[in-house]
Length: 294
Image 1 (cartoon, rainbow, N blue to C red):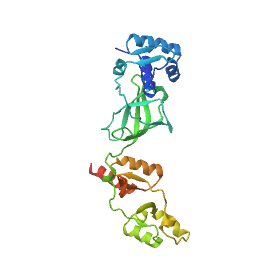
Image 2: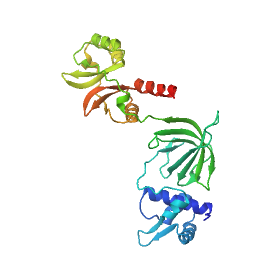
Image 3: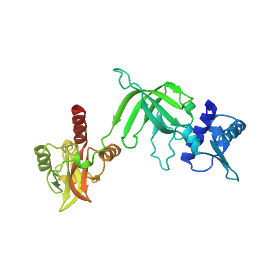
Image 4: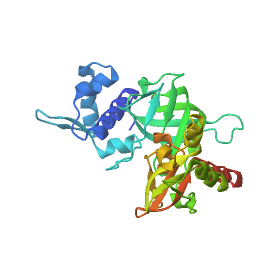
């Protein structure tokens, strides 16, 4: 069947609203998003019901639901559960739009990379020149940044000129971590702290008290202490924010923790027991190596 652009727009919005709030959707909700008269939406719904693309739900909490035929007509998957892909437009998150598909249209072009991004929701929320950031996507952890350079209202697709594209590795933390766990005693004088960090060519190390790890000390901590004439011990200058990540977790979780907490290293554990550390440098080195070897 051949649907009009208005009918496709209404169906797409209906499905988008239902995926965010799995209940029957009122015509007024669709009208508000599309900026149309509720009466117009009701009239279109009658046509869509006749085409068996929409079913009406009676009662005070009634409204409309899309049928499986509607999903097929719009070439959408009827997934019970979906991963949410964050979409940022001009520095603000767009919450009433879902990313359905990303198709790279100019992969072979030497100077330009563009993508057609199929969305579920109101395509008219986007204008040429809008900056977009979307991701990370499920499975491939792909993040894309770019600028809207075109819009296909009939197919609910945005044409985006891609300026940056990052895919984070899926390998476990253990493949990037150092298993040589260097620790510093809490009572170690600062001169010993400096010697340990320099000898092992590291930027920081966990601090232990007996057999327990209680903090972390870095070259930055050491530099600040020296600048103010502190002649204490590791325990005097360490940070007690000892963040950790299990060694079987995907490395992108470690990257997220490093970024969120603005730290340079994480303690790596196996069932809670310390086994090593992972640093920003470790991750960057391995990613660069994989790119160079590709």
